[in-house]
Image (tube, rainbow, N blue to C red; front, side, top):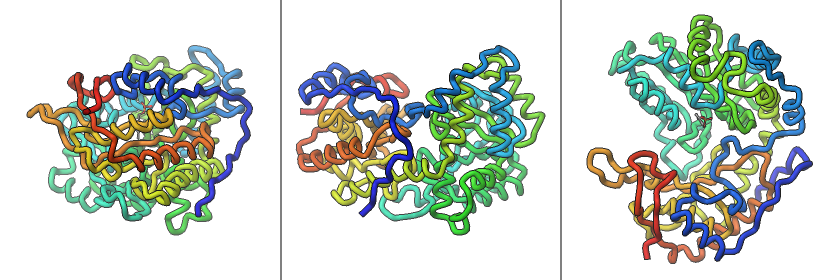
Length: 459
Ligand SMILES: *Cc1c(COP(=O)(O)O)cnc(C)c1O
């Protein structure tokens, strides 16, 4: 029996939640054209749409907001951020930006040329987008275990280093502009990457003279998994694990909306290349603003400096990963299928397993997300065929390898009782699973349709 890890904080400010009835939710969902992005947050009871920018800041972070320096140039916060990055990551240079994709926009043009390949264990969507905008090609080389949803493997987010080297030899090292290690591996379900794997990937990068960077959105969760699961790290402090992880890269991009627990913010770190830093500063000014604020208010930079440390606290991480593991254990007990083991920031429900009567072209992941909303006002999202746009060549619906419904867990926001509501809702849904209907799309835009498409249930 898994025990819920009690919160390592107490609550001093609350945000009331509106409780709706099922018939109200039926009305709201219909008005939103059965698209959960169209629901107003006031009509959601437990919002598990994303863990990005949805965390609760601490009293120390809110205190920092009051002392932030709003000077246009040379603000105090910039110095503090530089010192923080030097301390945590041992990187000489840093550049604040407004969020993760801005870090990609500002850093990647200096590292990738048109026609080159960019290799990652798995690119996050916006990273893939920026690689494409530069005329380069994003190639994912994750270990095959990432696709196995039922077997326990400690590090399903790893790069497949054998295939990586074979691929470099096949296309030629000069064709590969960059290697990006995404930790944790978001697109594989927040699965961690081992220290041995980061090290081995860097050795290959060095052997072929290729730059390696880290996509660091969930670096603290990854460090916690290394401490828990990798031999030799049980007694190493989280911050020392972080320092070793980052010693294997030349730079990093970070969405600070995840493990740095701010509502908006991003960061670039550069280990020691002054030349690269000069190029980054050059692009920051037109895209983000002057280098010492980089698209953020001074108060946001203060909150970021504090959040970077709070995200590394081992009691916080034990509670945070513990929440996700608690939900996973309860679902296992109830026979509700999900990707196992759970990752760091979310539970991926196996909608195909729960709703086998709904074919991929009627979107089981979306059907389960809608049902969770109707059942208890819980908002989640489809990570399956509905997320895939139509095939640009044939115009046909593409079939995803997995039909997931994602429950992403915001940091320091919900309690055990909230998660029990989620688990109970899923148990109720399982009982009437065969009655749940699939969906059809009535209207969709040509790309990224899931945000705005209009749907209806199939009667
Ligand atoms: C969220 C995320 C990004 C993009 O960051 P934004 O702050 O949303 O722009 C990039 N990479 C990974 C792995 C992420 O999770």
